[in-house]
Image (tube, rainbow, N blue to C red; front, top):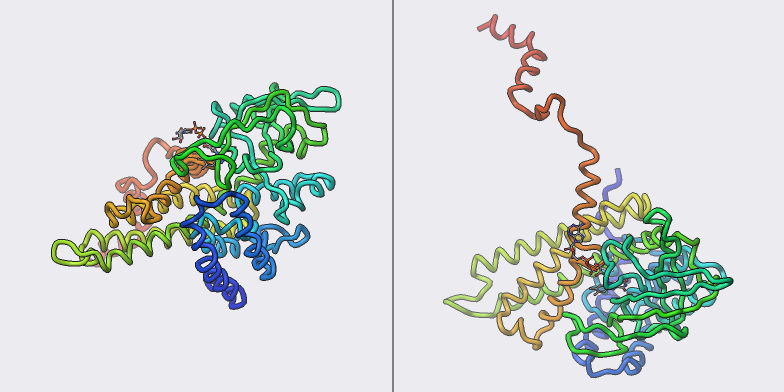
Length: 432
Ligand SMILES: Cc1cc2nc3c(=O)[nH]c(=O)nc-3n(C[C@H](O)[C@H](O)[C@H](O)COP(=O)(O)OP(=O)(O)OC[C@H]3O[C@@H](n4cnc5c(N)ncnc54)[C@H](O)[C@@H]3O)c2cc1C
């Protein structure tokens, strides 16, 4: 009987090291990150990344033959919970999105030459990458993609318009999803291409200012670029995987990518929760500290319950991925994708609410966490799409009841029970 919630002591030591490292080395970068250029930020990261490598924690999501640690999802879950406490931490550990997901698809679908040219330098931190799929007219329904890649002799020529390609303005290469087979079935129309960012015809138009980064800024980690592809000619060996296999490869990237997001959100929620509780113990209004108000106690208890539920659901989905594969865990990952995003949103919102104007101000990190949390409810699949997919799968297991009478209809069941227990009922009556 295996039903074990403990962490093995050796790994617990690693987690403890990560907790201290992230708090002492990464959190202090946060208040000055906007003053730093990307080059200065890289300089701060370099020695930290070395320490992570020495500790055997670099690129932990990948198998050892690819230079990773082969942790599996449960260990990764526990690790990401710590890294999630700061948006700057994953980059110090070689598992910053989108590089982490991109390295996974390169490992899965790349040729030996593509791995040599892109994967290994990506893993060692010498290259940066972006994943360029979403278009202004095609987001959650990628069968609407319009970007085309047309075969011309030994080349493909790519034309299209993308946006929200995270980190593209600091990337060395882009993984571009483009339609190659417009007449095929919807999920066999698109292919992926490896496109060096300096290929003629690639124009990074801008980093799109967002709720998370409202001020226009260009060329920094964590920005999301708008890109034009105009007559971008790449050789046929830029194709990643089979022609028409773009969606299949994307699924391999998205399922683990989604769960990694959920794991990091646990860290965001926990940090917001700590701020909520700390402030509650000290802010005084209407005759008591806020911790003594029942509403605030409800926030604390509800947040703790929601976080615990999200944590267990996330680690369970991770365990399922480890033991039964990503495909078997698809529904669990969809569940936690929308549930976890909602929990993070609610906990951060309560933390902001309790701090009042202080929480709304940039004197606290909560307003930034709130802006970050808001996007989680629609990137990598909006809540509605994940709910729909979960509900559809669940409902597939049900049929209309025979004769239109619900299976639990009490009078019908009573009749059946009377028949089933007729002997006993008659005997009792006889003895009465
Ligand atoms: C911070 C951030 C980073 C991102 N990084 C990347 C990246 O690196 N690469 C990349 O390619 N893309 C990236 N994206 C884009 C992201 O993947 C898309 O935002 C996402 O796929 C949703 O697409 P959309 O924004 O076009 O929304 P749409 O597809 O237009 O959907 C809008 C809304 O419609 C509703 N909706 C959609 N479908 C349904 C349905 N079936 N039922 C009910 N309602 C529905 C939902 O409320 C949804 O929010 C990023 C986005 C953000 C915010």
